[in-house]
Length: 197
Length: 425
Image (cartoon, rainbow over all chains, first blue to last red; front, side, top):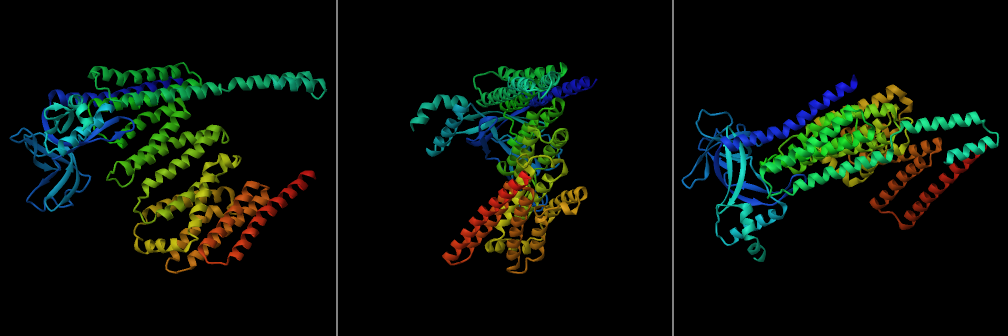
């Protein structure tokens, strides 16, 4: 009898263990298939996660919002660690820019992403976008960093951006591009020139 | 077999009868049957540990060339295989080795599955949030399988979470409270093992790992800019020592009682530090400026007093030794005498000296050489520290060292003699 309970208990646990990764997958898949793609300008670097391997950390040019309303951004309203909605729109070049930010849902027909406030000071609210990790094969992550540094050193001002699908505040980072070439391909193409320079 | 030979000799020499010899043989055969094959158990766990971490490492490579579907299969296949193995071992009520090995394997595949999905969809969750999900999904496993290995792994990832959340992820959080939940989730399991056999190897491992985890975990609760970290640690070691003194550990050997050893060593090391004049300069500045940060001290102090109170309640006030109340003395001196200049230093020197002497006495009474020498070591360290602290003539210093050395020699010699006399009578 006790054994049966143990077994049923385990079946429940096993289902939960399966549901968690499955839901992660399902949610992301849903955003990719029916969400809107946006391009966010980035600058990558190359750290490691002990379990999930190499990734590049993406820091976005979109990291603050300035408003003329000083009471609106006082520290009591936007404290570090707060979750905010960042409403976005496309600029003329086709890159995402901030429309407005808010802690509560606004009655707007615009896409938004969730972000975390890092600081706020006199009308300027600093925040961090949620899609900061892009996992790469371990042999390529370092080259990706080199590619970025090289582009900067020569003041070539290459276009570096990430493609993010957005739906109902959820966002899935799909790919990172350097000069419109996916970073994985870019690294493969330019690997030799990266190492010789 | 050696036992057979011994029994044969005993029968031949008419010490025991043939019947008794057969009974003894039957007893040992029955006893060994109940024991799981230890070698099989250990290799099973290590095998699963290596395979599981191997899978995690392979997944961490981030295979670019695989399609999304292939990656998804790799995310779920090991998990389902491991679940089937665990399900089989529960359903068939397999032995300990099966349960431990399959549980360990499942533990790792849960982690690998979440990692793989995170990679496919670039899920940005921090290391700490990854560790939370992983650990939560595996806690029930330790009770369903009653697996030591899973319990240790949960403790490991739980502790790792506390460090990751507080130190490496630069999170704006007050304290990683989830760590406490993880720690408490293992406690019922540990207590049940403790009640069954307090001297077993499994309990010994947990009796060391739990206080070690708590020490590391506490570090993340007492913020680095917290001005009372020192006081908090003295209290923490007081808690550990008092737990080590609970009556359930009475028959347990000292080396198997991690709570007692970590508690006493931690207490003595911190208290020796407070015997220096310079430390009080910093400590006292803090106490007068940051009296407001008392919350942690009150919480930890209450837990420590409860542990001490429980010991007094169970064993009576006379059984309490100085180590058990050292944290109380320190806290009183710290908070009541912070405005006086030299008195705290003098009192701390006296306290450490008293701790040393009381340990020597207790060692001598129990004929315990380890305890006797630990006490002498405390006194010696105190004397050595004072020599670095103060300007004393070299001849005098030398003389004092010779005295300490003689103390070591004679106290051991006298006790050895007494022990021989007692064992001869």
